[in-house]
Structures are given as structure tokens and as C-alpha cells.
Length: 280
Image 1: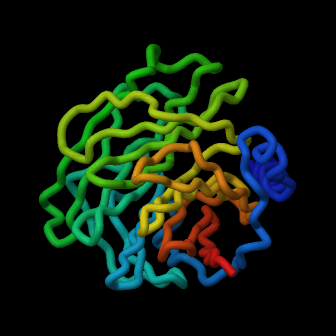
Image 2 (image 1 turned 90 degrees about the vertical axis):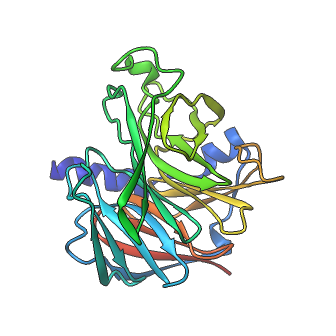
């Protein structure tokens, strides 16, 4: 295992934006941003896999990966634990992402699907002021035909979730061999059972581990191992049609990202490090 992690770290360190720039129309933009390590996560957050900013408190919600306690942890930017919100009625089957709805609610994405075998996935809407009032949004992908999917169509795992105008958006991680374009799905942010179909796709060389939409709704950031891809959002329509920048930021196994304003964002990795990415 240690040797595999070493190989992974080498792969991330050597990643490049060139294939994505030529294939999907990005421009290298790392020189336009500063990257600063700003903290270390409290030990209770052993494997941060989701991040959602709380602007009124200048803190973040986060959680542990699959098998962890069904708990949201409130942390500061330097990783200090501020509070915990246990959700004992839930099970952390494979929590992989968080999304926030203004200041009233947070969505927990139990959407991890490594083997592409889960027939039903769930997003939980939680109001931290009323944690017992949990609303379940169940779904399955309209284009998944077999469980598990065949190796060349394993594009039904996800770690990326964000909210916009009463809708939730999911981006596939893409475990297929050979690699296929990652897909964008959209579904209503209301309780019930849904069957989202792909609304767009884009070719990315790396696997997607999270995504977030800027507070002004104009920029979509897609996090992968070693890179962050930025897309311009026009006319309030979320698509991959306007790729702008590829930021090469090799900082280990990065798993979560959250905007703090229109241009700057925070990301965490599985070793507990917290980074601030700020536009110059």
C-alpha cells in the first residue's frame, strides 16, 4: 500500500495541463494564483471528503469519507474544530461531497460508487438549525444499464456535488478503462426519487474529486488530483461549454474544494492539509 501511495504521489507531482489544454480548450493559469498552506485539519477529521463554506461564520462544514461517523464537523480555515453536528439517523455509506443552499441548508452527497454497483444513491438535505428534519433525495442514473457497469463504462461514481437555483449538480469521477469524458448531471433539489440524465460532458485526464460554484454563480471549479479546472458560467446555465483555466496544483490526494468569494477558494487533501488558492 505504501508503495502504491508513493507511485500515486509521483503521478500527481508530474501532472500537466497540456493534454487538457489541447483536448478541451483550457489555458494554463497557475501564474494567476497564489497557493498557501493555511492549516491542518483536527484529528477527528481523519479523511476530509467534502467542504462547504459558511460565510456568516467564516467557517466550513466537512465530513469523513465512507464508513466514518454520520457527523458534520465545523472547522475554521486553519483546520481548528469549532463544533460537531451528529446525525445519528443517517448512515455514512460513502459520503463524498457537500453543497450548500445559501445559509439555510447543506446537502450531503452519499454518492460514492467505486464499484459502480449501487442501484440507488442518496443526497441528504440538512438544516443545521433543525438537524432532525432531514430530507432525502434519492436517485439513480438514467444511463446506467448494468450493475456493476462494465469496465469500459464505469462512469457512475461521483465525489462532486454543488447547488444552483433549486437544482443539484453532480459530476462523475470516471473510473472507466479506457477513460471516457466526465459527465454533468442535474436533478431537482427536492425530496423524492429522481432519474437524472447527462446534460453535458468534457474530456479531463484526471479523475474528478469535487466541484463548487462561486457565490456570484459565474465560475465553476472542478477539482481533480493535481489540477483545478475553471469554467465560465453564462446566463445562469451550468455547462462545460466555456472552459477557461487549468491550474496545476499538485498537493497530494486533494478531495474537497469550496469557494469563499467570487475568485478565491479553499481545498483540503486526505492527509489533512488545508490550502488557500487566491487570485493575484
